[in-house]
Image (cartoon, rainbow, N blue to C red; front, top):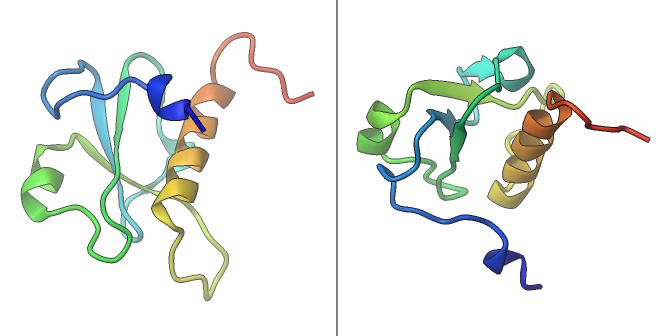
Length: 96
């Protein structure tokens, strides 16, 4: 509770950085992407995903690899995994 006040929120065009759309299928596997520098993860609704006009404005489409037979992740879990992948590649990150 209260995390909303710690996460920067902005309009789509405000932040600088590579816009990475998280999609359930047919994207570049997230662990294969360079996540250095400024990154903006763009997530959509759990059932409908991102609208085509939003996808067209993103630089990259990324998919989180899943086990065979898994259909999708909920949006909160997908965002958590994306942020973890981003943090994992940063200096000073500890897996301890």
